Length: 166
Image 1 (tube, one colour):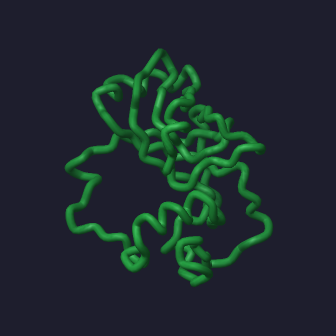
Image 2 (cartoon, helix red, strand yellow):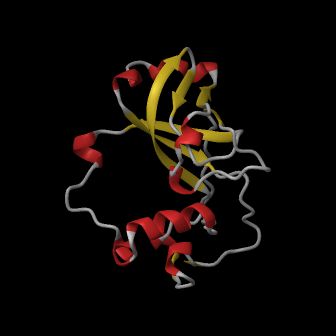
């Protein structure tokens, strides 16, 4: 079954082919000083009404720079596991059957059809599929855990995510 989607805008970041985005939006202070913005196509601008009342939003986007022709594996090797294999759906690898990215970002301001946000781990020019509000009472689960990452030290995980492969 074919499923169609509509691109509603473009994500603009300082990351092009010469500068890779950080993993999981784990930006340092230097990235936060750079501009990250989402430009909606004009016909979708009215959909931004009342979005400014939220502190955080979800961005859903198409991972257009990932080569999906090669690796159809249903497993992944997260860098924080030192070579250990996990199921693809237990990872955040960009090599997925449906190359959809998801980031929670801080909403800084909205000007017209542009949404200025905190660091998003996407290349400049990434096609935007959707924006959704982050509701603290719905989207934060008190009993959540880190799955297989519970066995990996937090600092170790973050340092490996910044320099390893996805």
